[in-house]
Length: 215
Image (tube, helix red, strand yellow):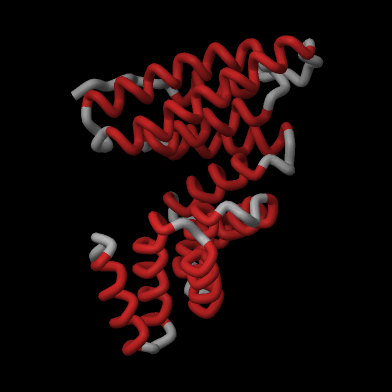
């Protein structure tokens, strides 16, 4: 299996070294283009390859190299930093993703992706209360992002806030694209179970299975 060994100490030093400086307009445009390209490649890799395979890792490592280079050029761009954090989530590098999320928020507290990255990383570390707080901020900044809404629903369920989870997943099902419905039904079933509404949970589990999502 293709692997890449990253020193957490080295990554921490690199993140700490990001400076707040002015970037010329032409360079800012280049940074935006690089970020958009990296985001597209990231989504394609996640959709095309099975996580953990050599093809998956090779694609993500290539994007990582591009983002490392962009971080050197785009010193004050919190979106580049948060994009790197989201990439680290896909690579399973949760402590590193946490650091990138924290740094991006420090640079720009209104960066929804930074709050998403940090909230997701905290949830994966079973710090559910802290994770929920950041995902709520992220969703507030991006109310039309229904994939993010599903993540928020999951976070409510992890925090045993079942009524909020049901409400949030229901909104995702009602308003969101078809491809997120299966996961939303599955998560809502968990929340209904938590609320002891077993008939509704059973109904949602059957709907989730129709989308290929199983317990």
